[in-house]
Image (cartoon, rainbow, N blue to C red; front, side, top):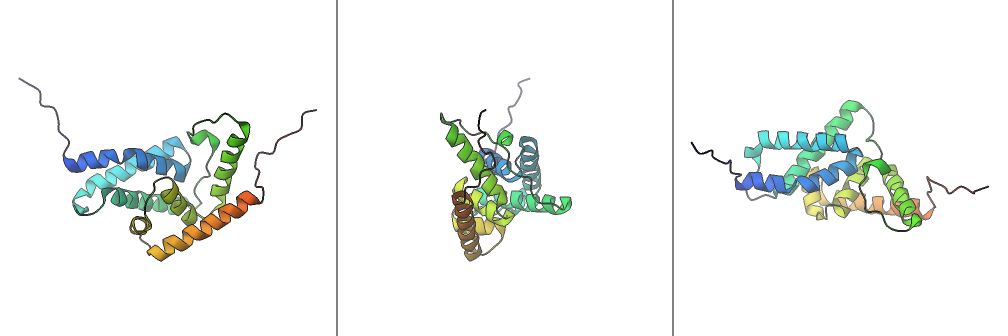
Length: 175
């Protein structure tokens, strides 16, 4: 008796296509691979259970990011503390040949961690996911003007932190 191979319908295939972006955003939010994978899995569990609520004319990526955002906020509230900071061990970035580039990346990660969670989320959605402001507004459930003002304040604070010489890893003098 021949074995049937399962087929993936269009909606499932679209959900699966969103996994890399969801994982990247989750890693940037929580900073740990295992916790990020758990967040992605929780997102898909909730999305699958509520897949009939997704409007066919809507953007699935924004819908999934909205679910992930709500789960992340719920988890933060339950823990009663801020999100964990980004660490060098939790980020898979290509290594560039100069030492100063690595220090700049570490400084940027440290500066991002100093932003408020609301500003950091929007900065990551704009920079990493290249989401338009209106999609971010729908994803986070806030007005588009709020997205733009948080992004503006976040960028300004990031510029200030980077220009003031935020150096979490200062170079030591050899004796």
